[in-house]
Image 1: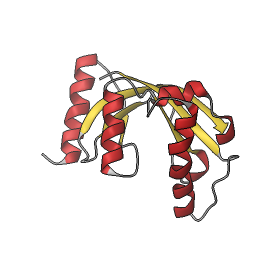
Image 2 (image 1 turned 180 degrees about the vertical axis):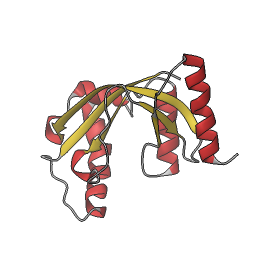
Image 3 (image 1 turned 120 degrees about the horizontal axis):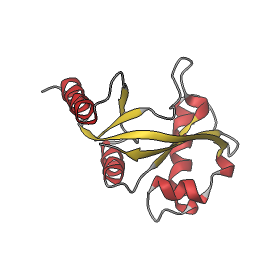
Amino acid sequence: MDHKAEIKAYWQSFVSKHHLQNATYSAWAFGNSPEMTNELADLTFKGIKTATTSAYDLYEENEPYPQVGEYNIILDGSGHPVCITKTVVTEIMPYKNMTAEHAYHEGEGNRTLAYWRSVHEPFFRNEFKEAGQTFTEDMTCFCEVFEVVG
């Protein structure tokens, strides 16, 4: 089965089990390498990772921002579905104002704000560089909190 068919079947099973009507989803993966993607998908599946952060300014012009109530199929590093999450909170804040609570919910490393900064700053620096922009601590973060629902 190809990945698109596998993802669609995974979603249809979820919709049927939960008797949902007119629900939609996005399928995506965390990170920028198969290893990182697998690690973060596993943390999500286990309910340890319940939040994520993206660079608000790097969204494409017509790319929608995550919305409360949305479903997401989290993929592993090979593009296979791992679990389904539902967005429960979204918040926009400057990188420099990131909270220890949000860092904890990201579920990575020792779950401290210091650890969060140590891995997210290089990640964001690289993303901004690839976009021809410069990372600063004033950059706007799009923070999302979710729960695993399937």
